[in-house]
Image (cartoon, rainbow over all chains, first blue to last red; front, side, top):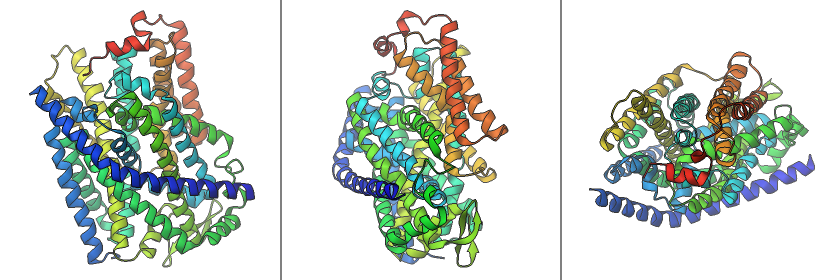
Length: 49
Length: 507
């Protein structure tokens, strides 16, 4: 039981930390990605019309 | 009522912004590819945001918290498997990379490319059936969560469900995948902030030492060791590995994100990083459930675990987590958390509405028209068929959600309804991509035996979820192998995956 508790505690710390870190990175860099996607969609739409 | 004016202002502000931004998506829709796969223009970061937002909802928080409440730390095994399998798929590109090369829009579309139009139709029906039944319980559970945390009278549950659904339908029907991706980004940020906030509050209020003590006293070793826990064990772990491999590769809403990425390489990066998010997606809400057990688990024993008692009222285990949030969060924070949970709810529901309605329109209605000899629909016509399918799915969900209550833990119900098509679809997709001998007879047998292996044992024979899962995957694999060996060989132009790429017609 002690081994399992240690294992789950480490797993939880890794899970929580990576969740928070990825949230920060995606929040900061996702907006530029989104703008690029919308720009290219408009270009695609213009080419077709 | 647990809400202050500040909380209402935060939640209303979120809803207005989300709806307005979602409606913007309509102006970017020029053809079906834009509507269903955002023109295949998703970059890595926005891809991670939309995939994570799609697969993290209030329903996810609720069923994971329920697992944590009932099974303690042992439940973490399910979360660990889901995350690790996703990372492995992302690193290797297993299935997703090849499917992305084929420029598909739905999973059943692969069945026409590799097998036959008839099998695409059968798969489309099974995927839509399993997917909609799966999503059928979302609204009710989400409505329960929101009414408990906000303190709205339970008699308004139907009204709450209807408002949520109408808002989601509005922007999904009009803006398709583009609207869903834009709103997913905002919703991802909000739901992640809420997840982190709730985790900190839950551990702070319950106390880490108290949490460990409560699980030790209540459950003993099975509360920590998943192999010793009678609900889990080795069979559960093996089934979960199989199930998560199939979910991450063939689940329509996940696959649609992979189909929407700029390239196969982008799809691999998105899958890998979202795998790390999936570890927290499972473990953090499970931790909330264990914290709720620590704070409120003082009622009569049900299967060895004390029921939650809040303000003298005994609740079901699944309601313990929202009751904990209602009691521990202060004004302002509660508004942020509820806005985050609403964001989670709307991102999942809109993506699922789009995913299942895409299958109904692209894989059931349009192939049926072709079989009947009707001329192909115009781009505008196809988008309208998709929008009508969206409305149909939305209406069905309202009625199914109101009248059906699943037996047992929600997590396991969701697993089984998904298995109805996942067992056959996964076996057929893997066989179709990596085994030259596979043929249409094997495909039909796999889909039908996989579905029968999920439906008959669970709904009629009342077997356990683990055994049902094994039966479904085992029967599907047997069907594919036996059918492929006795049926006619596959035409040579369908044997090589690289030739399939040139055979696909979607732009």
